[in-house]
Image (cartoon, rainbow, N blue to C red):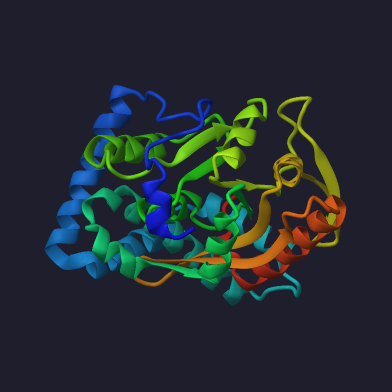
Length: 314
């Protein structure tokens, strides 16, 4: 399935249980509206590249003054590093973490202000053919992501390019995500909506996504039990035994969908890369969930050690 065919298949259709944008407060609408207007004005004045350097400058200022978050990152970095990092490595990487985080939010905020043809210069899918070939089978594709990288930026870009996308997310969605998607649904009704399925819901909506040929993405490196029906597998990662969420992977196997592991990386000048790294399950129904989960954990460990600035939860 290519981008065009994804769009033609009822671009705005959605599984009946998928959530649209939840309501958000008047204060959120006002505050994000002001921030959106300011960021858009800066982009028009100095260009996208100038806005990127503005974001890095703002992130560097945050790094200087937010010592508590800086310490949390340092603790998280030491925990995942293969070798003990030096003080200069921690300072350099933590500053990059702050800059990356601020720039991701800025770009996400003004996505609706950037023409679609220009957005093509900001998004790359490595091994895209493998993703399209998997979608062409018509049984959906599960993208196994982790809590690293700009999830919403990447998912929105996939939707803009015609892919039907659904994310399994925590029910406590941020005001920024609600604001941005609300603007897209009002200003660009012709584009596919990025659907959100809340993680504490029962899995019938996930089954519908596979049945309707969606790209379904979720992070499996979750150990918190929200509902009794959720399923976990124990894996080894960073020298520890942890339980990771395995429910969506098992549903993909039951539905005959393909499951692939992907990584999201932010690059200079608001460029984003989705790397289709490895197939975890094919569509033969001959699934070894335990081995697939351990393979997923091993790949996450390698990626995070190579890109520590992509840490999200610290």
